[in-house]
Length: 252
Image (tube, rainbow, N blue to C red; front, top):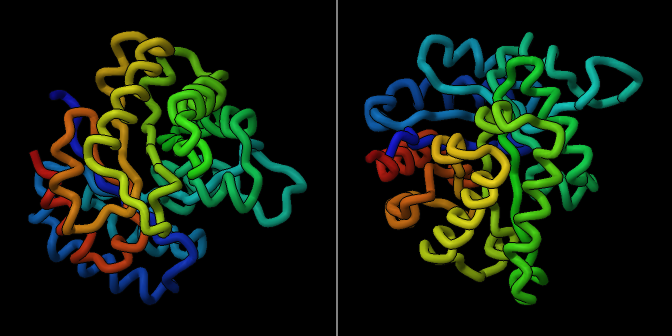
């Protein structure tokens, strides 16, 4: 497989700059455990520059948790791609399930964000995934197909090759229900099939991350699946040793 594994930690609305600095020091001390795996971290916007400085030269990616599609304007509370880049970001999450559910982000908006990131040189990480009602109704593939096609609608096949996809089975996050490795593989294989339709053979090189309550205890089993190329980790990434343990379990 030509796809190098990637493990990214999403801190959400956690960590001050001081806490972020301490986390980065712990991560750097244990990077040997992640040999062979790409790492990234998504700090809150206030800590982006702090994290970028602390991880400079380490090879660890620093991603925004969100970005606006416009270059500038009267958009109170938003950040542009230029602002993320200036802070040291190398990429950005787009359409995380919480952004979709809590802030009404929709696929057409995300399509604009994808191409804005690509134009600016930020690596876009497009998050997709079905809610519980869709899983129970047997509509998982319909939802994933729609989110992918609409979210990538403004990108050319060549540009799509530069996008990372993160699959989040929203129904299995904090609900007590579990997505098995087989379920994850089934969804990832379907996603790769749609990517083949959109980008041709380049789809074989696109990394698809799994984002369903990944922990050190279940990472190896999930990452062993052929189309699971890494993980987007939430709560388990708040402690650096935990993220490193997931990366170690992901190593090929």
